[in-house]
Image (tube, rainbow, N blue to C red):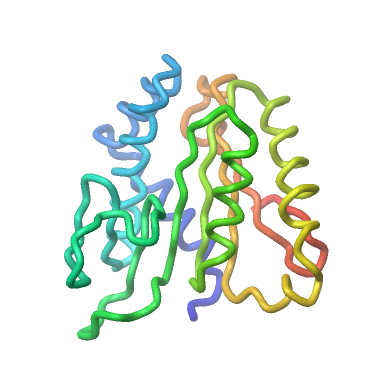
Length: 194
């Protein structure tokens, strides 16, 4: 497994967002609160970021054709990325959920879902209107999802888990102020700033 895979992916994400074809649709969708368009634009950016990492990805609108089955969202995960290989049935290197719902339980479900998958990198993207909603979301995810997992089970989690929250209140400083990044600290069951 790659060391500091989360930092590498984050750096590639920022590079990908420097390209106007990725940044502008995502920024406009966020400013207008068009969450369907936000998810579509973010999916394209996430798949492009994974490609910049040297990975192959499958997502809605980005069919990979890796397996002899046709879905583009394997295991009902929004994005699944794989290291290059000659074999088909391999574990993903990264899984990502892109949750645009204001329902806090949907975000909790997305986190739980990626935690159930064996991968070097797990990312959950969420969207909130304000910094206060973002703080409430992180507290909820910690208290409801992470604290429900025993320390012994958290310590068995391989790889890195990241939660990224975009906030419309911070869109003036898009993309750097807009996206806030937290990493799961498995030993404490809390999030630390990435």
